[in-house]
Figure 1 (cartoon, rainbow, N blue to C red):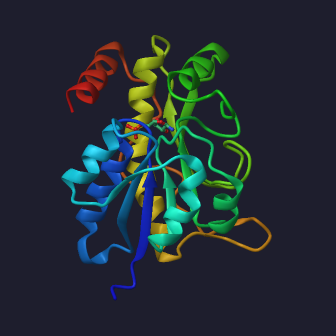
Figure 2 (tube, helix red, strand yellow):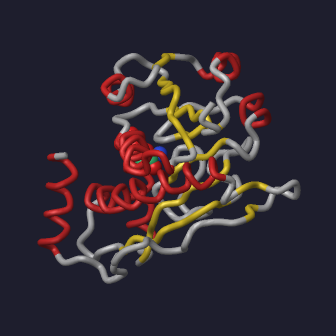
Length: 230
Ligand code: GRF
């Protein structure tokens, strides 16, 4: 027994956040506190499943109603929603309370809730005219995007941002934040206490240079190119 936590990642989309967690745990090597032992999607075509297979991680396609039994059968300790669009049933959020987290591409509690996913989030951020957006990782409870916040990293909004360019910049922050939270949760560095408060946590800004100055046009273009050529 390694003593490492068994993590299931639930993903509906391309799975770039899943990939970021896979890569980070691989980089930590023997120092990691978690192993991804299952990746679940709602449909066979989800890019996340292909990424999981490439990393030799077990995969499953399951409807939300079947999640509880599946996660139980696979002895899952921690559930990570990484771009998972279906509603997670109450039996799962209850049973994995304090052990189920989600990544959201904005600074909650703003710009979250039902219907606010994908580019819609970034459109709402730009419409509101806020200067700072960011990535949030939070515990999941019965309500969309409302559970206790574990960590947030800010991302500047540029005057000339499109929803796509902002999404690309925020996604890069997600890719760095989510894996760190997964390992911290598995290690017990962060936890939900019995009052529903988050104990412990991560630094409130990224570990290396991460400017809060809005990037210029050329940088925004390069960021988008880098994302879509990855
Ligand atoms: C991310 O922006 C995540 O925050 C949101 O959906 C997107 C998923 O991207 N919930 P990916 O599938 O991880 O590439």
